Length: 181
Image 1 (cartoon, rainbow, N blue to C red):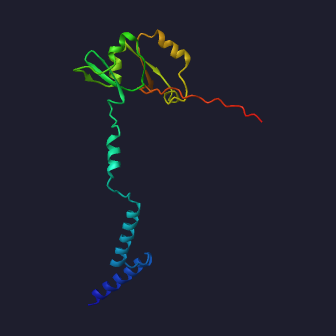
Image 2: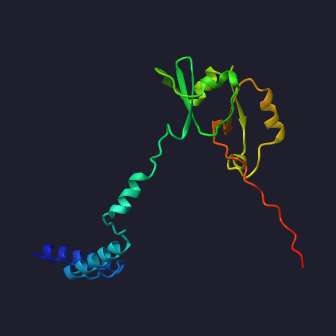
């Protein structure tokens, strides 16, 4: 009988020593506390969520009249020899008269990427790099570049980092006026 008592005493001593290094236990959350926390979280989510309402007939009519943007509507198409590619509108900055028929969609063409199309058609397409500010219309293209287009016999595409980009017309720069006293 002494063996079970000794074993019980050793187990008790080991358990007491192990609990001295632990943090005290805390009470578990009650059901009511959990429900209250969930209710508050749901109210916060509801306050942050947008309110959806049906459109009025006038709003619905305006929404239907808005022009739907499409990739074909915002692109120019270059076609030649059964292949075609898309470039953004205003990326084509010079088209010689003899190459004008290569702008626009043709029947039965297969589309390819601009890089592949350019590689196959280097004889009649040339790219000119532009800066971001020039593409945004904040800076004009240099006069020397514009004059070089007069002698160019190839279609000129504006590029930024080797990809075609639209070039907006330069914005008018307002000259500061001197104020008179």
